[in-house]
Image (cartoon, rainbow, N blue to C red; front, side):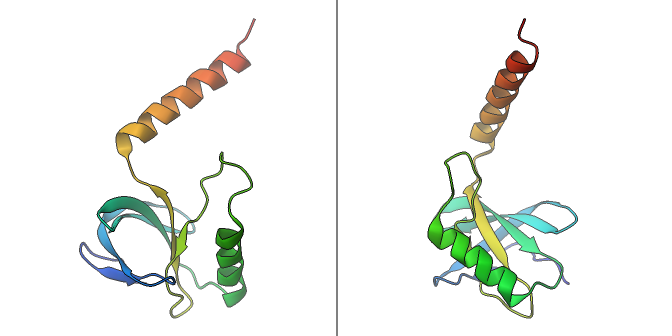
Length: 116
C-alpha cells in the first residue's frame, strides 16, 4: 500500500473530504496521519492491511452508537471503504492539550500507585 502524501484528499463516508497534512507515526495495524477537516486538525488512523466489510460495518455501527463513556478515544468518522482499506478519524488534534492531559493522567496514576 502506498502512503499518503501531503495534500492528498480522502473521501469520508458521510460526505466531504479530509486533507492529509503529514504522517504522525505507524504501528502494526496502520499509519496515523494529521489531517484537516473544516479548518480543524484531527488524527486519522489508516489500516494498511486488508480489512473485511464486516469489520468496516462494525466500526460504522460503533460510531453510530457512540462511546460507552467519555474516557474512550472513539472513532468519529469513517473514510470510504475502498479496495479493502479504510481509516477513521478519532480525535481533534491539539498537541499542547494532549501533552497536558498525559501529564495529568500520569500524575494521577503515580499518586494512586504510590499512595502511602
